[in-house]
Amino acid sequence: MSAFSINETALTEIQRIFRQSKCRDPVARLYETADPGHLFDEVKTALLEATKTTEDLDAMGKRRFEEVGDQLKSSLAVGACERTDFRTEDLREVNGITFVMGLGVPEMLREYCLTFEDGRFLLRGADNVAHTLRSLAKVR
Image 1 (tube, rainbow, N blue to C red):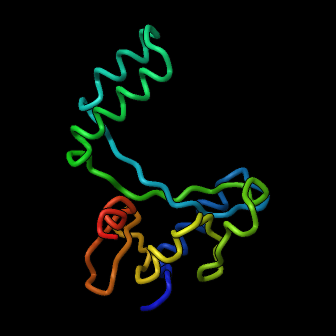
Image 2 (cartoon, rainbow, N blue to C red):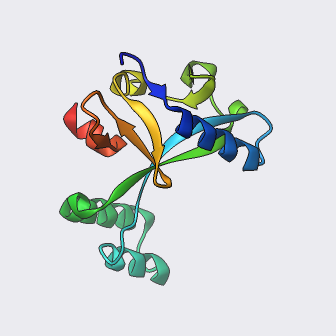
C-alpha cells in the first residue's frame, strides 16, 4: 500500500453518507471526534455562564486540553460537505471519492487505508494497527 486508499466497506458507507446529505455535489471530509465527558465541565460551565471573553474561553480550553488531551478517546468520522465550499487544490480523488485534504494531509495518509468496521471509521496501516488523525499527527 503506497497511496491513501479506501476499502469497499468504507466506500459504501461514504456513499450512504453522501445520499443522506443535502449537498448537491458532496465531497468527503475526515473529522476526528472525541467525547470529552466530564473532562471539560469547567470550560462548559464558563461557556454557559457567558462571564468570560472569547479569548479567556479559548485559553481555558487550550490549557485544559493540554492537561487531559491524552485521556480523550478519539474516533474518525466522515462528513459530506459541498464541493463549492473548498478550493480545487484542496480536493483529492481517492477510489472515486473526492476528499477535502489540506496541505500535508495526503502525505500524512499516504500509507493508510480508510476502513469502516463495527460502525466506525478507522485508518489502518500496513501493520494493521488502527489509527486516528491525532495518533498519526503524533507519529510524524
